[in-house]
Length: 319
Image 1 (tube, one colour):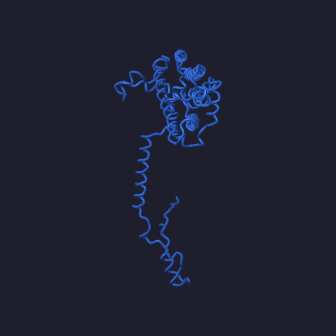
Image 2: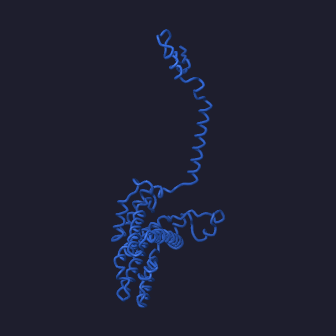
Image 3: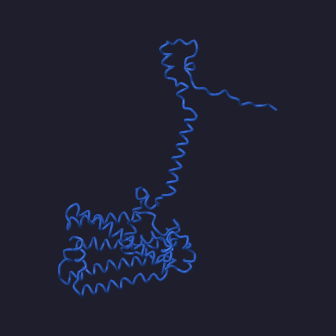
């Protein structure tokens, strides 16, 4: 058997003797220049210095990974800052269909559930577009009825932050609680993992709602956003052109103003009903149409008493 040895000579740093062979004709000045340009053994990085750098990088990476594991930004909010990931085409398609065929929008949820395994949107394009429309409306309303930079800024704050987002969070939470409490199918409740109230961080709230419900809170907020589109069209866009007529103190302006609000709120309830009715694990969602009866009764009371809700709210905004 032939023994094979792979002992190799150690690789040493390059010295000036390797560059200038013995006996070569070169001046002493050039020899000194080449020697001074070569790194000395003292300037070469030691193994301990390299190990310290690697240990420092490892500690930084461990701290970063620990921070990311504790604080996770949902994908929905991450996509706000990544413009190329936003699907504005689908958002505009949904807006167009919500106006004349809202059922078609909710039928498309089944394909989303099959592909992404969730009912709620993971794309904030719809919310961003609606906020943009509301901001434009606030600017035009401010130019006409509340001139000045601070007047316009106040309208943007009220219309976008308070009316749409803040009240939307409240309405979505109320809808999520009511749906979990009264509309969830019994078999859906039995398949939902519910924490023991003694182990929960919120034992009081666990008496009323399940934080591990099959119904996503974000879907309830999506339903609010879909329904709010008609609110923007009726009360922010159409009312903007009709406000000179609506603020007249006569029966025509009263009927027209109250009817505009009746249509907007009734359509909001209708689209909300479509949203919850589209989920296969909910039932008795027709009760969500009951607010329409209340809106009709309020319309009759206000109209017969001569109160124009459009005038009242416009005075409250621009007083």
